[in-house]
Image (cartoon, rainbow, N blue to C red; front, side, top):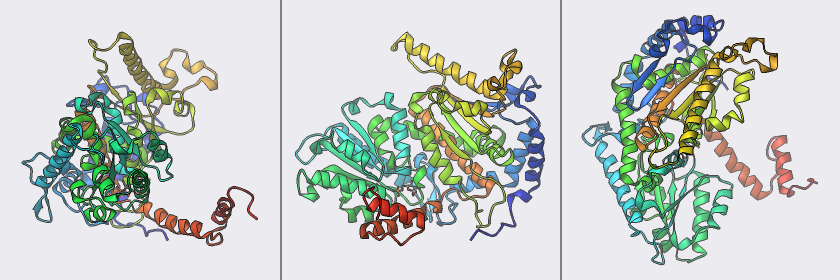
Length: 551
Ligand code: F6P
């Protein structure tokens, strides 16, 4: 049954209708036609702290942008931002706040949930993380035979994996000296491949598992944790001993960690008001803290706090998350651009697009309003991405000559290799990456017009251009700038959700699949082949026959 249409829909707003007319007019314009005003580059870029945000290659004119700000105001964006950060129950289907910003609040801030200031709890949790990090770094955390820990395995999935995995990959160069001898690993997939491969290379005496799960009920994580525990028990059958020395739990559900067997001393808690995909800043970020040390982790929090303050205080017109979000809505909803790709020109950010797929698509991949009515406009586009220079050799063909309109975010650090410490060749490589970044966004904008005789080329060598992009330049990639970048996208997601009138903090769309998987698993165990639809029954019969022709 589909939801009934929402009568108070955004599309009835005057600014929305104005934007529809504007978008229709934009369809007959090419990006290269928008460069009449000599001040466009300056008018369509903003500098904030360590970020330069250039949106001059978007299919937007100044008055379109003004209309987007008008829409934001008609949708009550400023009030919504205040409500988010104040701890209003913005996650209305689950009746709770979404206070990831409180996780990076300074100790003197007051943010209340149910009449209680939660900032001291946040800082107490950071102190607890710090003590775990110190014990591991100082080799005081010992395995059951008394040996120091050499390998830490984070077991988690979705928000309990993608954020720390992405950040650890991005910030490897900032490793704390005390972490040099520590190896970090990540295991997420339910099928067991990752953990099976990994366990073969680990020593149970010196391995520590972090079982990371907000709910502590996610099958993927619990099944990997069980496999890990069984592997440990092959070494010594004393379960209490093994768990006490080799398992840490990170969760909002202390009761379930205890039930699983993790002693209180090995638990680090966080709170229901932290959304899973917004939880990098909580104890879910423990692997990042282990890599960087607590001071590096706090630098990342400081970067996010910098962006929070910017988001909360800067007028819409100069506010980066607002601009990024409004541009996203303009492209997806008004220009009907259904694909969005994120292209870091820095291999360290390889997993940033994968992190954003969850952040954006699980948050805004929705078709009902906050009140539950059907939306009559398009919301979140399909998002994907990869390291830009690699993607040039993979899917840029489609961006340049395919039939899909796709919007792009180019991300690159201005400075990379230290000229005193690193060799000349690496500095050349960084310049090559930057040149490619600028070249690709330019060709995507202008197409054939980049070269003199471009328009006389045969069809297969023509480039239509007109693919819009934003370029975000970081002064350099560091814990601080990564924190700011991630918070920028978190707030972008919120801005879009306000304009679309969506609750971005729930994810009901993933529940049914989990439920059906349970009954399917049971049917597989019981070898019941006829319980489902024809396709599923046939596939199941094939599986139960071991891949041979089912009789
Ligand atoms: O199934 C989706 C989801 O609930 C995500 O929202 C979440 O990040 C992930 O699963 C993992 O959940 P948990 O941290 O509770 O194990």
